[in-house]
Length: 81
Length: 300
Image 1: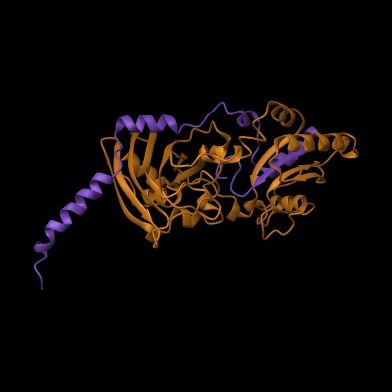
Image 2: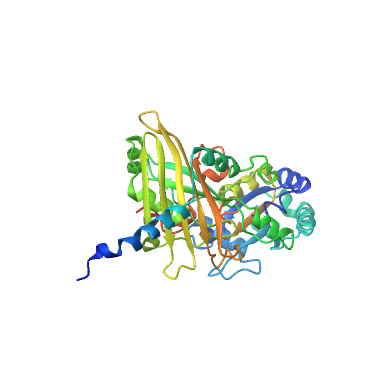
């Protein structure tokens, strides 16, 4: 059985290379990214008064005598799509 | 995201929908499958249009009278065309008997629970937003520009036990694995593929004195899709409830999915931001994408 300690010189550079390529994320970078990924709460589409329950929306439309406008997607239109 | 940044990024369209319609947004993957009154309502609407095979998508824009008559189906992304068609549908409605018709309320009845998931009792809802930070080539057109700058949105649910663990200063393994599998994804161009349990190659995350640090490595067997990211964030509590959960993942992503074509070539920087939902956003009540029809599997 070969002595694995003989291979140690090869393992250390690999570990070091892995650590060096690991992305740095400290508190300053966290703050920067947290701000950069904040949603735009003033985006125009947010001014539309979207309902998300079809049956409730249908009953509201019946009350108000208005037509429904349905935005139907794969994944929710207000989220994952 | 295309519609948010085009069709609905228009003052006239916004005013039109708010004043003269009841606008509703749905993930029709639920409604077309639901075996309850709401599902039947959707199938009755969509069945009047061209997408009436409910084994397939029924996505699009629909204008419907309260009595259920379809006035418009469209799946176009030309904002001017959509506005014109919607105005035309409104005129048709106003000229029809349906405009003055009294329509009785529809009872919800017995709900198909598979498609009506609720957040776990005592748990938490966390907003997840992702963005590709760099790596795209110059966009060829406006649609590409929109996709390249998109911010994805999903919700992450924690169970009551996981919430209690956070209050004690612990990160439950189940919570972190769920965060990794379903939310460290590139959903900026459409519905993303998620990670299998065995594709979590490394997950080393610590919570100490209210600060989260760690790293995660996710990869498919072939390596065609992977994410190698650092995690950093903060947890605060009032002793009974978590009052702050802010987390960023940032690292190199590679690959795309069937519905997220057009990823930057090679490795590109992807960040995902997590923060507590406070109910102020309509989207705060949307179930996690990964829980669709499978809540127990999502929460396990």
